[in-house]
Image 1 (tube, rainbow, N blue to C red):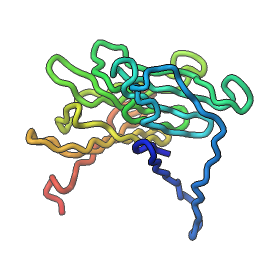
Image 2 (cartoon, rainbow, N blue to C red; image 1 turned 90 degrees about the vertical axis):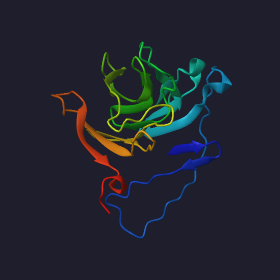
Image 3 (tube, helix red, strand yellow; image 1 turned 60 degrees about the horizontal axis):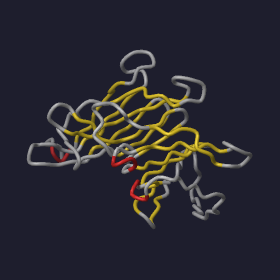
Image 4 (spheres, rainbow, N blue to C red; image 1 turned 135 degrees about the vertical axis):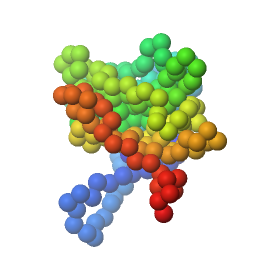
Length: 212
């Protein structure tokens, strides 16, 4: 599920091993409403992702635009209840706000997009968090990207995210007079060494590379 904007939800269905024809029945029953006591301007719920018994919710304008990501777990606080397991944020000196613009989860890996800055420029950032990093059931930061290779800068550019197994895919659709073009980056959990996330491959827009 991905909340595109208030009132619209996109549903993605994994059809791996499915036998066609298939029927998708997008019928839902509300079991619980989660309300946090943050400012209404926090944009809680503008990015959501779910895997198994874990739900990840982005609030990119929370805490004066710094942004936050909330991780909820089933049976947290009671049988069948959805309770807050942890809040993620970027409190580093490089943080430039809107942490939680997009989120993705698979298994024990969560990807988050936001913005960071160097001495002169604000640019899109990709964060990767892992479960049990820093303590049992704790979510710890395992990776933070550097400046995008396609020269995209914020706030016009932001990452779209997908996670599966040991791979995080981050898309950065962007075009500008400075020559930045769309790209997709593949990150692997062991690309920079055992247990160390790193860039494994990059795909560039074929419409801007002479490939028709």
